[in-house]
Length: 293
Image (cartoon, rainbow, N blue to C red; front, side, top):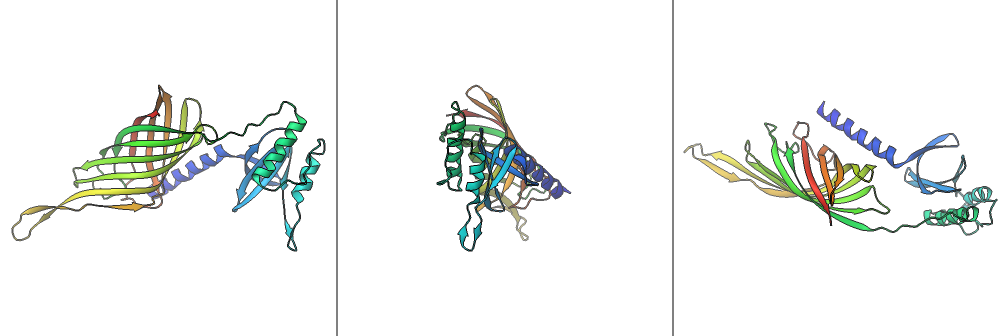
């Protein structure tokens, strides 16, 4: 039941991400989820379908797929005729257009400028910004041995890399997290992880994001009491060690802008595909503040 709940939450998060990032269009009776690359009198749409890049041009309500099929070893370049028909009301040539995102983008921008003297398209460059945050919270360490499902305090530091120009919805986060000693089994954990965040809601003041932890190094410190059967003397054995893994762990969080940074809340590691849990539903909540550097 707990695994079913985890999978359901993961599916819902992925569905929301898809809906926010793309828009559905119907082309020749088929539905496609497409990204908008260039918007104007002529709009360029695209996506990858079954690992293949697919491009579409939209003029008014008319959408056509830009194809380049291969027959007897020769490419037919049907996309050039499709573009010629859509742009025959302006003096633009399709002769040197390539069926690539840069090639199609350049052609679409040229046509849009020919149709509208006031049309402008700014090619924005990436500008990286960084944020440094601290957080604290509590966790039941569901992906470790925790027989009594004890809740223990956690604290740590985030270093986040964002781009506020072209990749506003994306971020990379390097996280240090310390899970303090669990009195039930004398264990504590230190973890360094690399995370990717996609912001399914992005506004000037508020962000809602999906967090994916895809690489982690975890060092566990565990003290095990061992009783000598002859003397009944109990000796504490240090059973510590570290390892790398690829947890593919998904969580959800939110940032709220205030001052020179953000109040940040996250529910971490709700679902992990690459590691097993201990049978308990994960509870890992943190609250903190991150500063713009």
